[in-house]
Image (tube, rainbow, N blue to C red; front, side, top):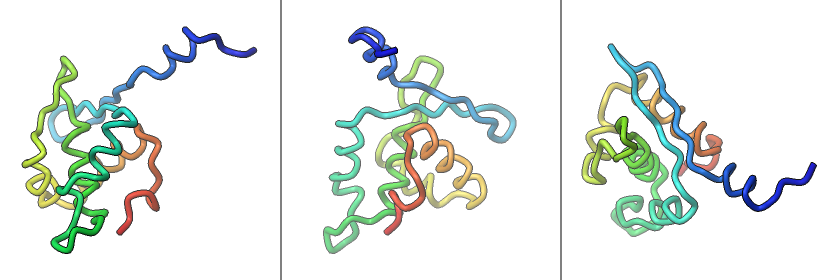
Length: 111
């Protein structure tokens, strides 16, 4: 059955996912296509030579996808370095959830 316009637009609404994290939960949100491109092209996703840096991109993407109960961002872009500097296993758990909800595979965010 082919979907109509309303059904397609309903399917395009951003989704969230709750993941267990420490003593509580973290809410991870999808981002829109324009926001994805904004993160990809951001100077904060580039190395000192101005080239794309997958590690910085992933940290910035993660910072932008973690939201509170009202859907507002928990972190600012400036927090991306602090997030990626955390414990590797727990950072990876956040990154895996961000990648999963946004339909990104591992090769998408590699350097």
